[in-house]
Structures are given as structure tokens and as C-alpha cells.
Image (tube, rainbow, N blue to C red; front, side):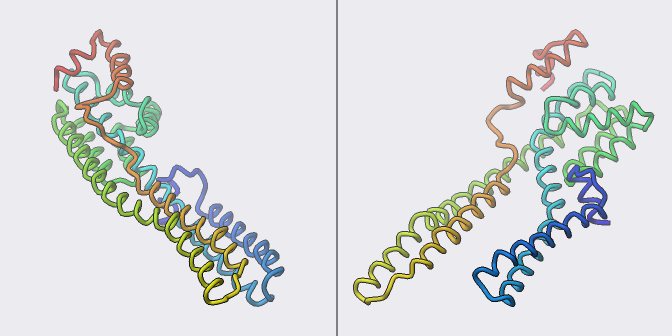
Amino acid sequence: MELRRDLIQANIKISPKNYLTISIIFSFATLIFSFYFLLNYENIYISFLISLILSLILFLFLKRLPKILAMNRAEKIESDFPIALRIIASQLKMKIPFEECIKSVSSGYNCSEEFKRVIIDIEKGVSVQEALMKMSERVNSRAVRKAILQLIVAYEEGTKGEEIKRIADSLIVEQKAKLKEFTAKANIMGLFYVGISCVAPILILTYFLVSSVFLEKKIDVEQIKFLFLFIFPIAIFSMVVFLNMKTPKSILGEEKFISKKEMILVDKELSKYNLNSKIFFSIF
């Protein structure tokens, strides 16, 4: 069932049946409260129709919400997944046990939660391959699934991690391409934002003033209130939400490998094997 998969990938610990029940309850509550509120402004039929539409929109949104959250979670995991892969690859080159490599990235990263669950599954007696496959099912990302398959190959064949590093490099290239694409979209959205937040309100106010003076039209105060208190705020808020959803979860800098914070984590893990970050970076 698609909803079950979306809930798992969104890390929402609730059954599909219970989630649908909650969605229906919220939608029905919206129908009741909006109908009661609109009765003060419209007749009973229009009020019921608007309330019904609002409740249906809410239900469809709630039904879609797990997929949206799953995609956002996948992007968050992808944001530093290449770094984790590089660390695993480098440690495999140093002949560190595979389970210890996985454990070294189970904290300090956006993807660490999933690697930690892999370690927990392994400690419960689940095979490494099965634990990694479960991780791929919990993340709605083709790139992550591809990398996990390569991790399984590396574990089964005992390779040194060269292919894992290549996958990590390809993921970084993809992230940079997404960043460039987002920058182009953000420039266009910025123009629309200025138009809606500044230009459009001024033009509308000018129209009302000119029409009242030269055309002797009476200014409709309710229309102005409706535009400035409802339409424009919703339009601006929608654009901000849209930009926030489309913003890449990782903004890659010019660093070749990892930041100072991540270097501290690397030193902490490598100290267990009497190694330091200079030896670690010399591999690259």
C-alpha cells in the first residue's frame, strides 16, 4: 500500500488506518467549524459549499502530506550522505571492519539516524545485507538505494571502497547541479515576490484613489480589506513556503572534503585505531 510506504519513509510511526481516521476527523471538524463561521456572512447553501470544499482540500492535503514529508526527509538524508560514504570508503581502505565503518557514521550527520538503525538491526541478529536493504526501503531516494546496493557489494566482496567513493563524488555533482537549478528558479521567484509584495499593492491603491477622484467611484473598503488582509498575505506566504520547500537541504561550499566540525568527528573515530585525520586525508 502506497500510504504505508509513505508513512514508513516519512518516519511517521502510525498505521495507515489510524492516519486516515485522523485525517477524516480533522476534515470533518474543519467542515463543522468553517460552516458555523461562514453562516454569519453567507446563506446556508453557499456556506455549506465553501465548507465542504475546504474540508476536501484539507483531506487531500493530509493524504498527500506523508509523501511530501518522505521526500523532504530523503533530501535531508541526501544532504550529507556523500560525506558519510566517503568516510566509510576511506575506512574500508584502512581495512577497518565493515560494521565499525557503519558505526562511525551513526552520529553527527543527517543520515546518522538511519545508519544507527542499521547497527541496531545487526546487533539484534539481522544480517548486514538485510539491515542495509531495510534502510533503503525507509528512504525515498534512488541515489541512497544505489549507494546502499554498492555498500552491500563492498561487504560481500570485501572491496576497498573505491566504487563507494565514486558514488559519493557523483552525488556531490548532482547536489551542485540542483543548487544551480534552484538559484535560477529563485531569481525568477524573487521578481514575482517583489511584484506581489510591493508593486501590486501600490498599483491597486492607486487605482482605487484615481477611480474615486476622477471617475467618482465609491471606494469599497471591504474589498481593500479583503485584498490586503487575505489575498496578498496568502500569496506572499505561499511563495515563501514554495521557496522553502524547493531549497536544497545542502548548500555545498568549496571545501574539498568536510568541515571543521566533521573533521573533529573523524578524529574522534580514528583515535580508536591510533590514527589521525592527516593519515585519513592522505588517502585522497
